[in-house]
Length: 156
Image (tube, rainbow, N blue to C red; front, side, top):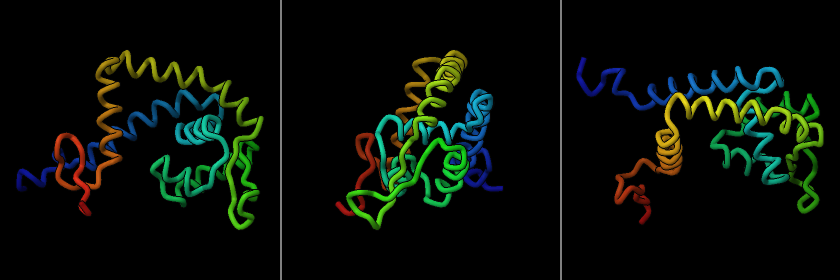
């Protein structure tokens, strides 16, 4: 096998493995509240930013609409989020956290904070901050050559 095609050199595999590992840890912490980490993130974002379209939320969470929809269905069934007609554009629908969703978010937040603290204790506070910054850069890249730490816009 060629060196550059070895599985341990695959960025996608390494990211997926790390994501699954961390996601499973957060899911275990949030399980007593009936939430998965992704669902907690959805409720947290809606609690913080207010009502928004599915497209806007999907873009913010770097999810496709289908994946977001699969995560929203149990939240809707549980009365944690609502999907209503947008008063500004009756053709559009807006997601909002309900009072029940906000209450569950506040109950679950200490478990999420404990997971954050445990991750930082295990991985290191500075390393965790550096990892978050690096991963934010990954989500912003257009996979063009880097110049001074930023992706070069292919259109420029």
